[in-house]
Image (cartoon, rainbow, N blue to C red; front, side, top):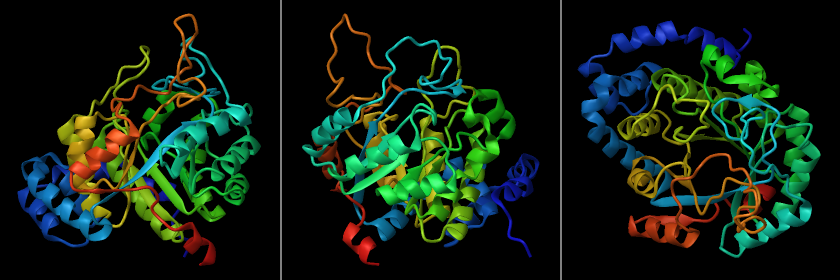
Length: 384
């Protein structure tokens, strides 16, 4: 029998079926899900339902126990390095979008500038970085990204990328350059909404993006990170589909670690109003329910969230966080300081946690957790 593709799984778990399951949730089903060690999709839906809100404290306590059991009291640290803010896709919610109308400076870092950024971060103790670009494969080709990985590997033990969707052969090129992980958000699994917010460019191809992480896994990428942009669509559907995607990747890309991120849309261009704002209580429900459903998966939280929120969420299932972040190319050294007469370099989104790396490390320790600069030993991977 031919195995399911993920698009077939999405067809099976359509919005109508999920809505029907939500409508059938009662308090007993929530309590039953809370006492189980291994959750079904139906159990996850129970924990994501409005009926579970009165039990958030119990969910948080269990999420804390599970996270400490599998990950200890550690938080892995990484820092993003934006290589380019040029973009050929028009995504309504993104400041990088090709037709955003924003006049701030667009740049692609040169090799010398990449080295300057890497050198600046390496002085601060960072050992894991995430290289990012806009969705512009012709302007910022795979060869450029691969060379950037090679450069970054001279400064850091672990180099990951968050770039546009690629073919398997292109992902293999990144692997050969030394890439450890690929982050790629589906943004939303709701195809109708996906089509409405992605107006043009390669990113508009829903199925090509949907299957990108699977191609990366087949190419040999060690860590695959998936997620949705919370706020684009009804999260009670999108999170179920995200969970299904993570389970699918666990089975099909079994040599890879499957990680999840929970970016919450907060600051967007003026032409886009967030249609499904996600409040903090809902974010807590999402993270704790997903921790109970995916006990072994690393969970990431970026500086999109404020210092207060990030500190609050550390015990609830988060295992990895960005630190000292800038979301513009050259934000650490090359374009760190600009005069009033210069056009500022365009950033992808406004961050809400402005603490330095040193301040954030101290905050982690004050919560009783240990900051971890790298989550694996490269020598072990190479000798395996």
